[in-house]
Figure 1 (cartoon, one colour):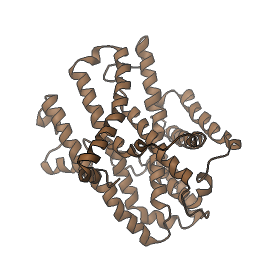
Figure 2: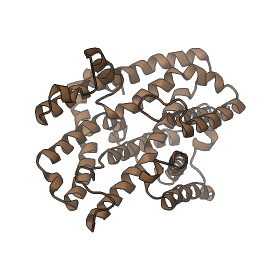
Figure 3: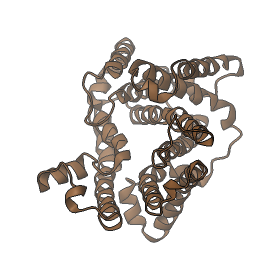
Length: 359
């Protein structure tokens, strides 16, 4: 280990602020609405501008949020862990902060989606449960496998890596073995040998990278990067963007997973270090602590707005309305969860504490 046994006020502040703004990026990612308006790369005039604007924001810049969240989660889980019993203790805590919220939110999202799709959109129960052949299968897929709660893939995957944390603990005991494991996880992330049900398993690399930094990299992140080393994030940023410019927008990178993986790594690391130059200018606001509520509540809000757009035929109103809808959805996807959090903290503290895992 590198000898740093405490998280500096700078790093604590940085994690809080970065987590908030990256939760906003997740909202921007999910506000993508060109498909609802039948706008594509082949659209003419302003429609083409709208398409590429949303594609760059949603499919390029916003993609770095997920890697950083997994790295922060791995870092916070393993920071200060010296003994195996501490790992078990943290796993027990994560049951209440991850598993319980995951299950409750899946139930909540299933009920909300059933209401929106059956009552509002007019679908039949058979259409809503298409592909499920029994009540047991419905329960498993909706409650345990996040059928109707798309953002829950993050919690699902995080729960899996936390459950395997005793293995990571023993790997992290030796630096050389840890570095070898990082390389292995990087390779597995590229080829996806053992895919997590429904989602990319490359997140293991980012989770373990955060764990590794908590043990052996504190001297690199516990204080701001010096101005003389600004070439590091600049180089990474230029490299990541050159991938986009050379191979096209992110939709093309989907077919070249290696490039996508490298793009996300370099972009995430460059933004992490770039943040050092502005963190000292920012004050920690109360709403910065609302990153998790934004994550858990924004998707259903965006679903409601998108359904409203379709039901009112606004999706036929053209590219200008599409652009305006994007900004409105992004704003409401951030503001409404914050207002809901304040309301629940005042009138339903116990319910809010259970849903958010005591955050």
